[in-house]
Every structure is written in C-alpha cells, then in structure tokens.
Image (spheres, rainbow, N blue to C red):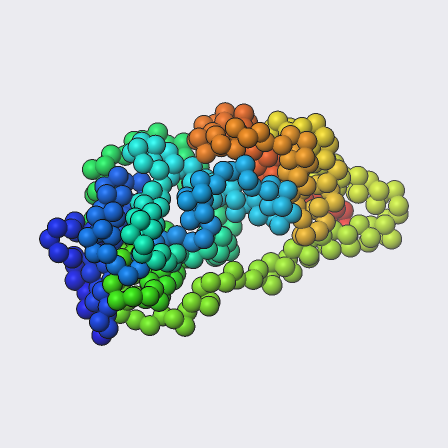
Amino acid sequence: MTQQQPATVDQYSPDVHLINQDGREFFLVGTAHISRESVDLVREVINAEQPDCVCVELDEKRYEALAKRKKWELLDLKEIIRKKQLSTLLVNMMLASYQKKLGDQMGVQPGTELLEATLEADKNKIPVALCDRDVRVTLRRAWKSTSFFRKNYLLASIMASMFDDTEISEDKLRELKESDMLSELMNELGEVMPELKKVLIDERDTYLTEKIKAAPGKKIVAVVGAGHVAGIKKAFGEDRSDQMERISQIPPASSIWKIVGWAIPLCILASLGYIFINKGAAVAGDNLLYWILANGIPSSIGATLALAHPFTIIGAFVAAPITSLTPVIGAGYVTAFIQVMLKPPLVYEFENVLADMTTFSGWWKNRLLRVFLAFILPGFGSMIGTYIGGYEIISNLF
C-alpha cells in the first residue's frame, strides 16, 4: 500500500516529496537542471537523510559525459556516419546547446545537480543507482514515433529556441517548478505532440519509477527533473514492471515504409526499362541523363551552399543519382563521410560546437557543424531531384 505526502519535513522546500511504501521511504527531489538552488537542495537532502541509496535521472552515457567531462572530440564521426546516426546526434546536440545556453545565463551547467548527487553520495559512501533510460533509446523512440511533418515542426522549434536570446531568471525557473504550472505545460505538450510526450515524459516516468523501486535499502533519495515528479508519484501506486521490456527497445521500422522505400527506385528502374524496350535506347538514354542531372545538380548545389570541400560537391553530384535508387543509404551520408575525411573538425571546434550552434554564422565557421550541413543540404537536394526526375521519367511512359 502506497501513501504519499505532498512534502517532507518543514526544513525542506516544497520540491522535496516523501513516498512511503511497504516500510520504505522514498525522498523524491524535483529539480531544474540549470538551477543553482537545485544543486544546494540535493546536497542538503542527501547529507540530512543519509539514505541507503541515491537514485539519479541519468543513464550510463550521460553520467560518463558529466563525471568524466567527456569531450566532443572523442566522437568517432566516421563510425556514427557508418551506423547512420547523424540525425540522432544532431538532435541531441541541439538540445544540449539550448540547455547550455540557459545554463550559461544561470551560472550553472545542465545536469550539475545530478552530478552533485553522485558526488555527495560518493563522499558519504552511499551507493548510486543510474535510473534513466539510455538516452539513445529515448531519442530514437521519440524520432520513430513522430510523423514526418511533426519531425519538421520539432526541428524548427528546437532551432528557433537555440537562436532565441531571451534570458531566463532564477525566479522564472522557480515558477516553472511549481507543480500546477508544470502540469499545464505537460498538458499543452500532450495536446500538440502527444506521441512525443508519451516517449519523453510518460515512458520515462514509468522507467524511472521502476528503477527507483528496485534500488536497494529502506531509505532512498531520488533526484529527478521537476517535470517527472507528478508522473512518478502516480506510477508509484501501480505495478508497471511488465512495461519495462517494451519501453527499453527501439521499435523496428514500419514495413510500409520499407515497401515504399524500395517501391520508388524499382518503379524508376522499371520505367527506364519499359522506355528502353518500347521507345529505344536513345530515348531511354535521354531519360537516364535527365535522372542523373535532376538528382546530381540539386544535391551538388546543397553541398555548395554548405561550403563543403570541392570533392564533397563532386561526390554529391555522383552519389545522388545512385543513392536515390536505393533506400539503404542517402546521398547526405556519402557527402558527410567525404567531408569528414577531407576536412576533419579541429579539437577547438569540438569544444566550441555547442556555442557555435547558437549563431547562424557558426554553422559555416565550425567544421563539425559544416559536416552536418554537408549531410542535410545535399540530402535535401537529392530528395528534390528524386521527385523531379521520377515525375519526368514516369510521365514519358505515356
């Protein structure tokens, strides 16, 4: 039987909640990830309660990045491109850049209170449990659950927030941490993008809760973002262990999209074959040349706009007509790989990438960001060329 209290004892702020369950005490500390007050609160609760275990809203990768101050230059870009994970990395970096900008305004870096919880626990010889889901699983589940048009809306929103110069005060953060306002924000997110809220908030509420329950000891301090507090308190009253396997996996790509991905190039090739048989080699050759130019020119223009290396631009022209006939790899991955090989980012560019992302010129000045431009713009050009070239070839059937 679970009993919940809205707060702990009087010496703590209302951001600390106590849950009593089966003779165990769970101190739930709701934080803002860029608030100095949250850092102090975490330290205060751990030292006062001396729990048997400290749970934090971190996975192994995020903890390693915070604890070891892992540098961006340790990224193996060629391996990331090979595994076709550039899109996931880019979204992750955009979110990190936005949080860093807010953290710079507040004088505390994102996740400092989570790292402080692990350091304070280590100082007191208290075991630490990393209770969040792997961030790569979360991002890929979120990406796969979002429709094509919603993806564009999401990326546009993230980009807009990165270039937003509005400053946020500690008082404003305190307002955002009020439960009623957070509930309102979550409800608004659920109305606009319910599939995204389900993955980023609801599923992680369940995951965090089950991991916190599984922590050893009778007294647990759990440090989580304030936006998860309401969901975790609700989940504590339920047994959701049967959901853990499902929400820990990346859902496979829809078979419909696989069929569509192969159907388009097969349709183009079949059309060229039909034209060859019924209208002759010359007409088929003209259509093939049109396909090459329709794909190669927009893709190479995209690489040029990215200020990519000349060989990357040539690579875009050569690759686009070929990659457009297979869903296995896109032109953008080919051009990104060429760009990395010919213009590898320098160490200081890795270190400055989050700051450079917040300025328009920074995307062209920073070699790492130029790799992303060499991935996005030629790929977009190739997509345009596929529709133009495909329309022309199919129309010539009649």
